Image (cartoon, rainbow, N blue to C red):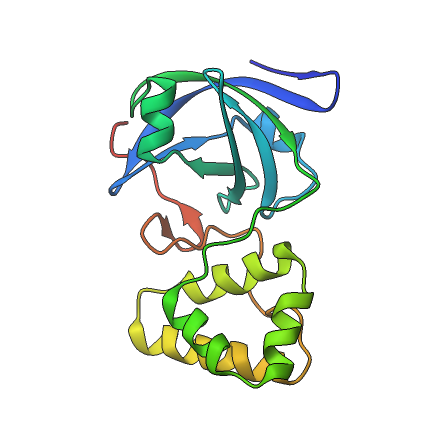
Length: 185
């Protein structure tokens, strides 16, 4: 059951699932429908009363999901197969993404103009660049994406283009742009 509460909070219960080596929560359809985008959405909230801030990922089927890392699982007393109570709200401010080493190295070696652009764009735009680079397992494709990112930023592009923002792009958790079914179903 999902209910919207005062202050645009979205409350729901969801079961944690194991996919590959990750533990994830797939939002119920009704909770995803209350979000402003079918793509990534920055949120803050609680899971079993424990505070977190993250960026929800699209599942490729008009819904959303999030990874629940080990420290959050331990703090909330949950693991794959458990049902948790979540209370989330859309965050105005996006957290900074974790920039992968290859992209960080390329940015550090890039001309000042590109470094300035990277620092000027919004955290949301930085998430999109990181997401695009991370969306492949193939090392040659990844290398090419880092090079193309630097080239496009050199040309003034503030965001990557030509990829489906509502697709699930985690190469370990998706197939054909959709979040795979959990191992524990």
